[in-house]
Length: 294
Image (cartoon, rainbow, N blue to C red; front, side):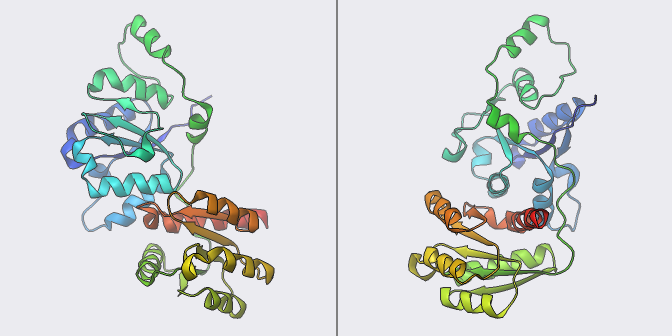
């Protein structure tokens, strides 16, 4: 039985090009499908769109972490986007640099010496390393602590990048921040013209729009109307308005998200940096799940 090939996105800074290219070569040699920017981005392409599609495609983001990666805008956008999409992230540390707090609980690989560290990464990805390692070295690697089941469960195969559902997708965004609403609307419509996006900064106006128009999904920020989003959620549920509701919460407010789920929201999105880049794919996946249940 053939093994399912892991789909790997390599996130790295330009200063780490050399080790990242070697890493990509090793991963491809050992059977992985690999996306790395120098090989996949062509002149004239939209960088945010290409990267978003690639992160949606992958099942694991290998984060080449260094001092330069800490300062890279695009590296931060990539790993936070992957985190928003709940992808598996494996940090690979190539020089002395502190990981972001949110990644400290992740399995990480010491790649200061690529030749010594790579077999551990390959093992985490369940790849068969094609090399001439001695049996004693292989035994030492195999005696390393196993990845916990929750980490392994994230390393699943995904078929193709998610495509938007047929026809227009009507989205209502409700948030107190006008600037955020405009950015989110442009981001969605930039990714696909099928998105028909309406926006509002008022909870009561949100309810009025839902009563007057059809929407495929509502993204409701819990901070709308001076942190009154939960009350607006309750009013929508009690009004028997048939619309899937996704609650938006700030990082650290996951308890509010769980309360929203208990009230009737279908899901929640944590507003970490980079989540706007992932928003079109997040919405699409939610709509696909809804369609499966219908």
